[in-house]
Every structure is written in C-alpha cells, then in structure tokens.
Amino acid sequence: MNSQLIIPLAAMFQSARLVAEIAHNGRFDMETATPLLSSLFQFEAESTEAVYGGLDPLSPGFKELEQQLSHADKEQIEIPHMVMAMMQLAKKLGKAETRLQQMRDELVRIEEKLEMYELTHVNTISAIAEIYKQKVSDLSPRIMVKGDPLHLENPDNQSRVRAMLLAGIRSAILWDQLGGSRFQLLFRRKALLELLRNQM
Image (tube, rainbow, N blue to C red; front, side):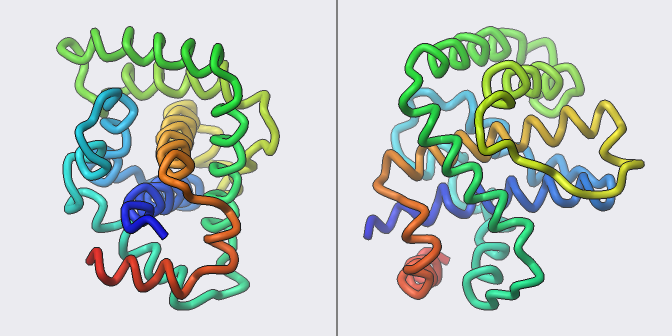
C-alpha cells in the first residue's frame, strides 16, 4: 500500500469533520479549513505533502483519522459515510473529463481574484461553493448533511459546507490517483492505521 495514501485520506476526514462542526454547531475553524481550500488551487504540486502546504496543517485530520480507525464506533458513522461518498463522487468525476476541466477553469478564475479576497473570505468560499453546486450536486450519491436546521439554513454555512465537500472530493481524487480505494478503508483498517502512525 502506498504510504502517501494516508495524506489525502486525513484531508478527507478533516474536511468531513469541518462539515459536521458547521452542521451541528455552526462553527467554522478557518485555520483548519485553509489548507483544504488551498489544495483546490494546487494544480501542479511537487509532492502529495505540497498539496496541503506540508503535513502540519493536516494535524486535525490525522487525529480524526486515527480516532476513526482505532475506535470503530457504530454510532459515529456520519464522518466515515461522508468520506466514502467523497470517494464515490471522485471516481465519477475522474471519468468526466469535460466536467473536471470546467471545474478547473472556474478555480483558475477564482484564483485570479485571490489578491483581492483572502482564501477564507465569504466571497471566495461562496464562489468555491458554487462550483460544487453546479458541477457536483447533481451526481450520485448526493451527500446528505444532517445537523441543526438553524445552522444549515444559514446561507454562509451552506457555502462553507459545499466548499468543504469540494475540498474533500479534491482529496478523494488524489487518493484515487495514488491507488486508494473504498475497499481499503473498509477492510484494511489495520494497515492504514500502521501507515498513519508511521506518518505521525
């Protein structure tokens, strides 16, 4: 198993945890979100680590992943289910070259405006969310985010959720490119945990 796999996997879990925090508590940790948002604009990264600006920014994702792999709690299925759906959507997008190119073109347009707006600015996140809405939300499986309606009905939170889901899918595409599969997450948990602990 490719040792690099653990990096995009941790990023997916970091994205999913952020989505859950927004949905249930209305909290959006910008510091935790920044490397994930930034990864959307890393088109020619020199290494897997470079996609996220190193490993340190993924520390929350590594911790979340270790917890999920070590303690498979049947009641805590929301985040693993979200990650599995990200993987499925990444597979579909990987076969839709035109759609992927359109998404990349939109991201390039957003990147050109980053001098004007910060990565975590509401306008940037809204623009990223619109890509998810236009290019991903019509694909199946649809990721059904559950939480407090008070938070989920907030337009800014809706944009944050979509932006984090798109970032998660970007990591899932990288996971797929490195040879990752849903089978490994389901049935090779011990091997993944060993890779994770070696990485940490």
